[in-house]
Length: 64
Image 1 (cartoon, rainbow, N blue to C red):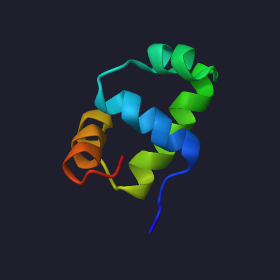
Image 2: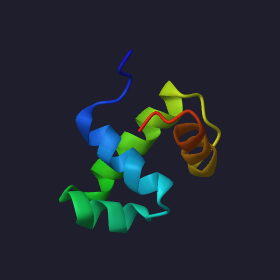
Image 3: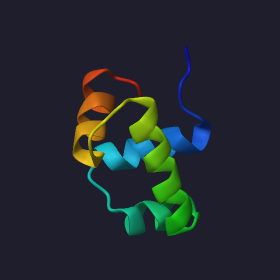
Image 4: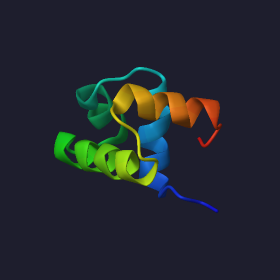
């Protein structure tokens, strides 16, 4: 099942690589607010406690 939208996948890929919200925003040409919303949505989808936990889940589960 594909749980992530195309934008969430791109945000997730950069998140796992350690980019900040501002850096992700610049790379994908979206506002910082949009990046924060995408990360918040992914935190909820994966029941992650924070962005580090989310990056761990995404990386370990090879979701991206």
